Length: 133
Image 1 (cartoon, rainbow, N blue to C red):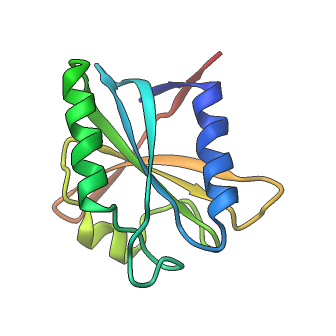
Image 2 (tube, rainbow, N blue to C red):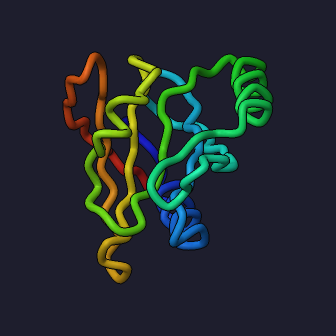
């Protein structure tokens, strides 16, 4: 997955602004390159430990992505207190096998960590995050 440095900074800022709750968003683009990120609202019952996008908001975002001829290339979310790796809940709820799941950890608030994973059928594979200027 390729994304601009400004997008990395925006995802981290979103995570910091939402802490101590998890935040979530969608990454749109094509051929593995992110063209736009969409912040979404976390409506999970326990937002400190999981995320769930508002379904109407997600539908609006997906329609906009389609109108640009893009794909949903990824979903990002934060782990305010845990490492940047998929939790058991993340693995269980990963419903988009073609998407890359980007996780930003704020466990060390001074040094956020961002990693990307492909999750399909309980199999996890780390993906490279290429950051462009």
